[in-house]
Image 1: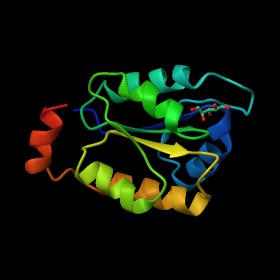
Image 2: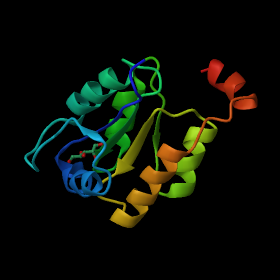
Image 3: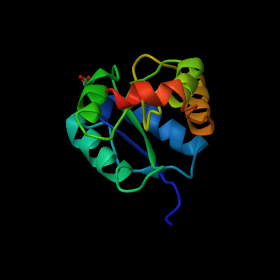
Image 4: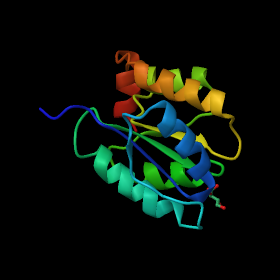
Length: 139
Ligand code: RB5
């Protein structure tokens, strides 16, 4: 079975933060954008969610200015549970309680330290299932 892959993508407003995070987490697969030239966030949300859905266990990180556009676009895809996060505690909880497979960060409203801690918490936490599974099944 293919190993779990962690993907990251952003629009121009998230490009700077994405670049910093890739330096800290070089194992993450970068799907663009590749500069701070203006692009449309749904293009990158769709590109990343397509990859995440290819293999059970894959996860993704999306960044735009507020994180809201990426969240809306990503959550349109069946099988994607994307959570907008601005601190590590919430990043941990979206894995444990919501089985989130996409972490969304607000590139213009989070500092690198909090973003790094959030990524670490998201990647190292596991879904608790149980009562949370029942709730996810109702979505
Ligand atoms: C781009 O200016 C900005 O609108 C975008 O990054 C995002 O915040 C949309 O939700």
